[in-house]
Amino acid sequence: MQKAVLVVMGSDSDFPVMEPCLKTLDSFQIPYQVRICSAHRSPAAAARLAQNAAGDGFSVIIAAAGLAAHLPGVIAAWTSLPVIGVPIKTGALAGQDALLAIVQMPAGIPVATVAIDGAANAAILAVQILAIASPGLQTRLAEHKAALAASVAERQDRLDKKIAERV
Ligand code: RP5
Image (cartoon, rainbow, N blue to C red):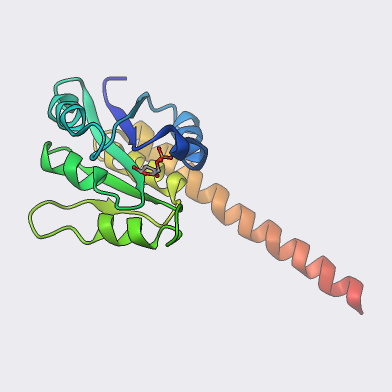
């Protein structure tokens, strides 16, 4: 598969939160690469990574960072690929700082921001972007939604049983 996702995180300390992102991409059989890169500690490398991403064959970038989380915005500044930002819950403000830093991009440079620690949703959004040009991925996304609907029906069954046991 030609199209792929570049997953960038500000530190290896972000990896535990980002593992569901990789698992979700795996479940859709999406090829990806993971790079550690910091807007503050390695700004030149961050710029290079973003500038080269399209030429390296990537179609979507997921960028995760905590604290004063400039990484997704800096990446978005250096590429025209869609960038999905994941605010990481860490530090004194528990991810609220990262959420606001990532979501409040000035007009002209968007970052599609998911919830604090929303790693799995970042992956699904990336798959949805790739699926625009892939009927196969569209089918897999439809199956994903059907599985979600089935899980709600199972929850209803479990709740019905619990309520019946009470009386
Ligand atoms: C951010 O600072 C990283 O994305 C991470 O969430 C946070 C803390 O990084 P470390 O000090 O653990 O490397 O740049």
